[in-house]
Image 1 (cartoon, one colour):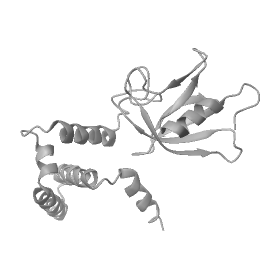
Image 2 (image 1 turned 135 degrees about the vertical axis):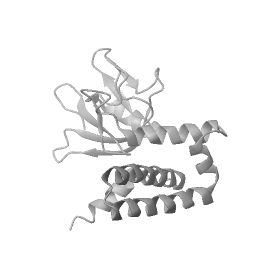
Image 3 (image 1 turned 45 degrees about the horizontal axis):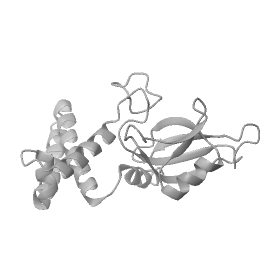
Length: 193
């Protein structure tokens, strides 16, 4: 599988939740085998000349969901569930020019949902939604109608505001159902006709 020149193959790492590219790394056969065996990404560090598990010290692990090779078999695409930031500089992606402008709100919200579910927090609105299914469903319906009313009145600012509310509540519902945004994107791809 690896390149005969130096025994390494480049790995493009992609967040499965939103298809964002997180980083470029390298693997040798041993790193690939460890990834398959453990279910977590392992790479070959060219600077340390050793194998390392992503997130071993930082906790920012990458759960391996899918590995694919390109048409020539000389590169790997790793689709992962990223915990925390992927870049050693502390940014979500190694390819962010401006971490604030490039931030991924979907992943950030997913982390908030996970944190609220874990920590509880009776004062948290998100926690209340996750614990009260009827309230969550009512809010999705309510926010849908508010988008319709704002659109009927052609109030651009209100449409944006209400769409934000609707998307937020819909994302909480998707999270609660264990459905990733990537699954919805795939569904949308089938509608490009």
